[in-house]
Structure formats: structure tokens, C-alpha cells
Length: 316
Image 1 (cartoon, rainbow, N blue to C red):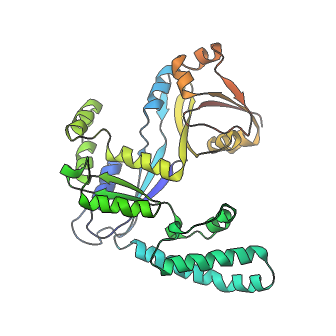
Image 2: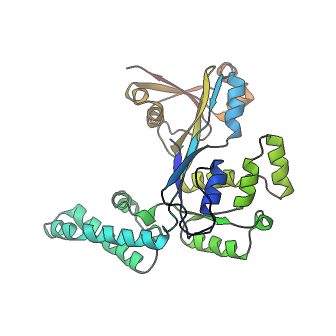
Image 3: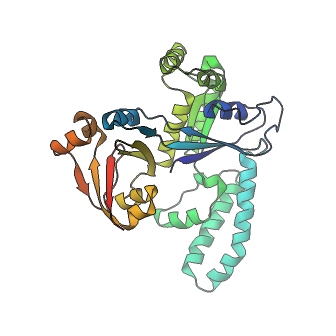
């Protein structure tokens, strides 16, 4: 499991250029005229994580498999206004059946109808559904509505190279808007990302970034912000054949994390032999961690932590 990120916005703001740079592909034609992207283009990128390489080195793994992020370059005419209109149409279709059920005494229908009416009011006020206040007991029903504007949003400000490190007056305004909407905001320069994508040597990339006052690529910053926005963490599996990163939501139980690898792992779950990342590094891998008493046998309800190195035991 990774996460998917759709790139939407007004024509000619650099969506396809950003997409090409972030995915290091030429999958989209970044022509300089409106609506040049007529169909969604998707590209997968590896999620940069220095911990995976270190773990793989200690495990002497033959193969290293990072987590993946999928970017989708959405057609140029799709902007939030269209998404809000689509949500309003969706809510309108839901309303009549809910009214009938609510009149018949259906409590869940009454609760859903209340959410529909509140969401409609928010959208008619020109605001996305994600700004709507939803109680903890309403969260499940709210998710069932599957509103497009309720999805987490990250504003990516494509700026000139000179503003890549600090942003500019316009990106500052976007950051304020993002904060008001419970959204994330990242400043990148698509032009810089395109240049970085052409550099193969890691040291050369880092030197180039530092010369511009940047510590990380825009891709890394987008991914970090995305993980935080979506509440995602990474755990690892490691062995001589393969070390791999797995992306899961925060507060995921061990049995569910096992199921991400294969349903049999969850169905026949016995335990999760777990070593924290810090212990794994401090004791030079699995064997050293075992000898130091730092490997734990966790049950199915254990909440997997970011950086855990896990071996699942199962029987089917």
C-alpha cells in the first residue's frame, strides 16, 4: 500500500511539468497551451527512505523494494469549483431517499440526512466539504458520502527557482488558505525538479540542492507532507532475499499490517516478531537484536509503530 495523489489545477500552471519532474518520466506532454492533458496520466515513484537502505545493508538483502506513491496528472480543466459542483449533485441525489427513510423512523437515515444538509450548506457557501466540522460519532457516515472535496488536499506551489527555498508572496497566501482549510502546502520549483531528475549521482544531486538552499527534493517534501496529511507510517520487513518498506495508516494493528503483505498472513496470524528501527540499527540487525533481548513477540492487536522491523509468523 502506498498512496495516490492527483495533480489538479488551472491550465498552464505547470501541472504536467511538475508531474514529469516528480515521476522522472516523459509520460505527459508538457506543452505550453491550455488543456494539453486530455486524459489522466499516472506514474509511480519510489518513496525515498534512508532507513530502508540501512536496514537492507544490515540484512545483506539481495533486493530492496521501497514503498510507492502514484501521481496522477488530471485533465487541465478540473479545478475545485467543478469538484464542489459534483459533490452538490451527489448530495442532491442522496437527499430524497434519505428523507423517506428518516420519516419512517430510520435513525441512521436521520443522521445521514443531517450530514447531507450541513454539507450542502458548506458547499453552497463556496467552501470544500473538508472544512466541515464532523463529530467523531459521525465520521463513519461522513466517509460513506465519498465527497470529492472531503479528500485531503495538498497545495503545491510551483514557483520560480529563486523562490524554491523560501517561497514568495503568492505562495505565502496559498499557505494561509491551506491552513484555513486544514490542508497541507508545499513549495516546489518544477524547473528545479526537472533538473534534479536528470542527475544520476546522489552526491551531485545533494550538492545541486544545497547550492539552491534546499535540503531535499520537492518530491521528498511532497511525500513527507502527504504522509503527515494522510496519517501514514512505514514499517519494514527484512531478510537475506529482500528488504521492503510497507505503508500503513497510523494505529494499524499487527494483524491488519500483516494482511497488507498477504491475506494468508492475517488469516493465520500467530505473532509479529518486532524490532524497533533504533534497536535494529544499534544492535547490527536481527541477530544482534535477538541476542540483546530487543526482539518482541507482539500479538494481533499490537499497534505497529513507524520504523518497526517486523517478521510475521502465521499458519494456514
